[in-house]
Figure (cartoon, rainbow, N blue to C red):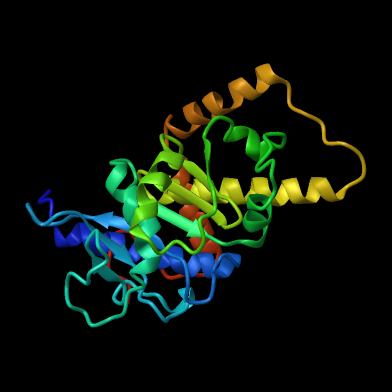
Length: 254
């Protein structure tokens, strides 16, 4: 397929718009702030392009048609006239540029995620969901509101080869080779944070997972995720259907 195929971009637009709407349904929206970004094909020599939400509209208002295509500096490639929060793209642009596998980057300020990010211990790998991410969570120290390009190299170093990043005192971030994969990772990370907060509220100490078991869990999950059907896509599509969001992979939505 042509690397700048309009059909590829159209499909990415439909999927990303459905994801923004789903975030709203799940309570993961943050007013008009935060982003989910996806890399899309670009003409040869043009540099990488990404889709992002227009600044000033709620996640529930995002459609395939009003997503903005930008370059690595956050500039509106198509001169659509829609505003983009370029400062808010600092985190995403750094990671997209540094990681070829970062097709999709998701960043949220969920209550559970922010709460865990404020804890000195961070995420403990002592529940069903957090065990799946053992050895795959990076941490980045808070440097204030992320608006400076000077922070980009430090963000990249903090993420390193991990798929999950806890921005201390800030929130959560995940990357994925596909949007559904990124969604599954974020959903798992969010569930891990929710359960950690709930378990900490109960009486008595938390029970640790045996070290040998903790070593096996991520590898087992990886084999399950890469064998047979695309579990991440099944999860994403099911959640979209359950939310009643109009979405089709094979044709344009009305």
